[in-house]
Length: 306
Ligand SMILES: Nc1nc2c(c(CN[C@H]3C=C[C@H](O)[C@@H]3O)cn2[C@@H]2O[C@H](COP(=O)(O)O)[C@@H](O)[C@H]2O)c(=O)[nH]1
Image (cartoon, rainbow, N blue to C red):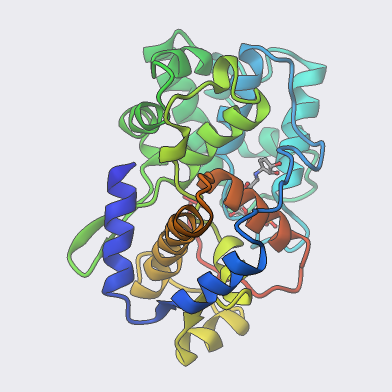
């Protein structure tokens, strides 16, 4: 996690298209007196939860597929969360490691009750197979064992996931450097923490090491708040729904500056109000705010990472 923090900070200081406005961060923090609005995890009541290992399997599969819904304007995260939940409720073995390895695109679509091909359907199926194979090879088929082997460390869990599952290796090259973002691996940790309320499979001693999850919603919210300022060329690209190529400076800056801006926000809250807030808490507030405004323009990058 230190690498996520340090490399995204480096991007922020070398950024050409996105700037962090420190004065606006201060205004936001002051206006809330350092109190981040509390948003309950699963505020939409859409996730499977049985307080046991199957919940962990569900969250891991969900976060393996938790990316790039926007190419289908009627599709969003909730369809996946609810679709997989229903599939599990109908058949407890639906997400077993051996089953994950055999799903086809049409079967996945059917499971999610989606009437047409999913965006990046072949990639989603490939990632499901990868998860099934590696869970079976190294973790007795269970994501719960992967979590157990992290020894209650969020940072270790993210590292383990990145080591074992190539689909989660969310990183980029920027001005000659490797930048680590790890959105889906980190959100899995946060989902466990939220679902199990910091206990059992969600008990991590270092949950404060997690950063926000750099997706396509949070940068849009930070821009709306005035915390991120885009160059006029980037404004035009985002506002006209023009696709931004993955790995371009613009794309990396949007994501990395979002992470760094929130880290700065946390530091300021600590300094001014003496409060320790988690990036997870800030993320959930920003994300839940963003998804309630469907007209908020967000950047569009075809990616398997977010
Ligand atoms: N930063 C951040 N990004 C998040 C989430 C979540 C869902 N987290 C759930 C877990 C517990 C809570 O109850 C949440 O419901 C999804 N995403 C990302 O958003 C985008 C999808 O947007 P749309 O197309 O409108 O559904 C896509 O990139 C997706 O990967 C989050 O929490 N934080």
